Amino acid sequence: MNHIARTAVGLAALGRPAYLNVGRVPELPAERDVATMRAAAHEVLDHAYAAGVRRVDVARSYGRAEEFLADWLAEREHPDVVVSSKWGYTYVGDWRLDAAVHEVKEHSLARFEGQWAETRRLLGGRVVLYQVHSLTADSPLFGDEPLLEALAALAAEHVRVGFSTSGPGQADTVRKALDLTVAGRPVFTAVQSTWNVLEPSVGPALAEAHERGALVQLKETLANGRLAVRPPEPVVEIARAHDVSADAVALAAAYARPWADVVLTGPASTAQLDANLAAAGLALDQAELAALGALAEDPAAYWRHRSSLPWR
Image (cartoon, rainbow, N blue to C red):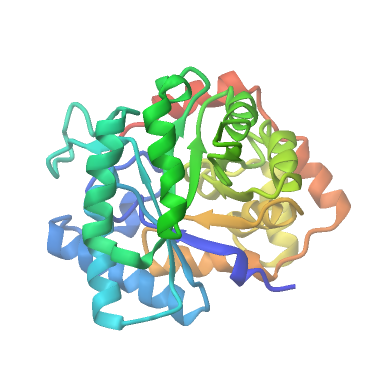
């Protein structure tokens, strides 16, 4: 089975000059000025579209990713591209590699209204899914009735409302958020969570979400590049057996989740995209999936490691 239809290309690695992704830097142009990064983003988007990918994922905090995507859509006029974006973080890196802080989080009504206005200005009616960025179980959003009502009102604009999750408590967040209702209807009908063979702990909660009818999307499927650049030996062995790269094996494990509706990848170049897309036609057997399943790390340790990754 070819899983291209389940694939989304994210622009986190191409919308800003710095990001926390192992293996990104060698793939980028020597200069990371706005014009060069826009051209790199457009090249990846063209390549993805030619390969059959029709889903693109961005966020307000991905530097100028929404702007780059808007420019590309205006130039190419592809009517079949589906766009998802996220609000809740603001990019404050000022297009600097050495910024002390690159993004600031705030889940408030004012932040939602301001960022939705910006997203809508840039992407118009292209956005079919708008998500709370990195929701956690302790977010003030859960007790903010005006914010929840404003989110629920997006349905009237034919925009689906979702949330993304991060951290060792993802499963709790998924279950808690999907129980939120306004006027008897669920606020959220989509979830985007970190899932990969090193950190699969949210899997049972995502399976439940899928059963409830929510759109389930998997992000950070390559563990911020760790599974591509520093893959564990079982990943290397399976890749060698199938004559593919390690990242294709890691992504194939994500495609193998029957409850995963969309699998995201965030390439920094067309070469990385090609390697990633090899996973769409790769079928792993049960022994291979079991070997990959044995790679799971303690979630707290995984997230401590992730937080230590430098922005570069």
